[in-house]
Length: 435
Image (cartoon, rainbow, N blue to C red; front, side, top):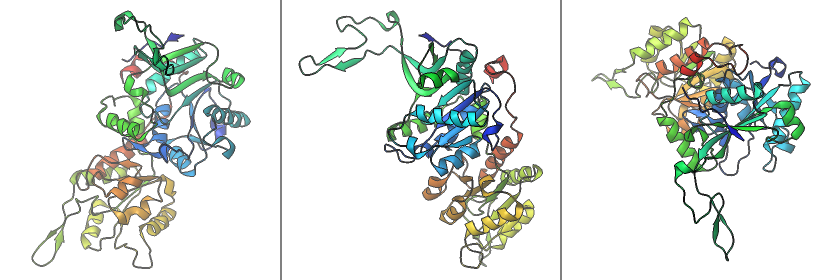
């Protein structure tokens, strides 16, 4: 086995996949250790969406497929830019292997005339994958340097195994009578489980992820984290919160919010959810000029915007006129219009934007009917816990303090995002490495 050089410097149809490197992400709905694990959020993004983003951020990967038996996982993955293969129940249980899901997805691609030359198996339970590592691993398989390349970290750990009551524990990779220094020991490699790049024909023949000439792609320790327990999930969230390596293309893909329309609550989103009341009972609120500029950017980009509020105060209409956006207010479920979900559904049909292509930003329980309908449910950072729980993205900003501008920037980023570079897989430029 040899090591990778540690250089650190969509369509809606499967038939659209025409190039030779395809990433496949198996993501079933059932999980006993952490229920709904593939939809748990790290850094404001569901795990399956993070995996899709990492794959889309790699220039050497031409298309991303998610194999799932779960409708919600499929919806989230599709919104993130993946193609969906419906995983049969017979290979979606606890005992089913990842290989079975990969082989089934490859069969479906072959039926559509889109069988790849190289398959990249990515696990969504590894939320910190660097697209540059994917690119380097893909390049090695495409070039014929190896038939399989998997992610690993170097280790000098002394391993022990239980040998039973008579012997206690015994050394696995060392003589317990000899304790050589770290620098005097050759490294060993710990498989992270994050990704495996394989020659597709070889994998289909072997029906297992390890065959032929196998190599490792060394990755940083933190990028090799695999979520198996609740403690792992919390650790991943902590690392994502402090990770400063956000200047590569993966950050662009993860940060972008790819939607065609934006709907927001008013109080607690455009405002800090407080009001000024004078002696005559007249109310006024404080709003952010940055938010107003963000709305203008959305309008100029041709993105429909609506304010959907339960508040009946005229200040909501006045702000809507100022921003030149549609306002529907007084929606609290007490009249024939129904709740916010009902009004939002009617609006999306009228403007011709499917709900899965809508972002809704809320902060409190009255927003839940709308948040549960859209493709991008979004919460401001100080939202009620029930809103944060259903949000696909939790913004960094608080309501009334730039949250709408933050959202606008991320929506505009998605509209400006270039398509995948058509250069041959594996050709990494210096510009790419320094991005």
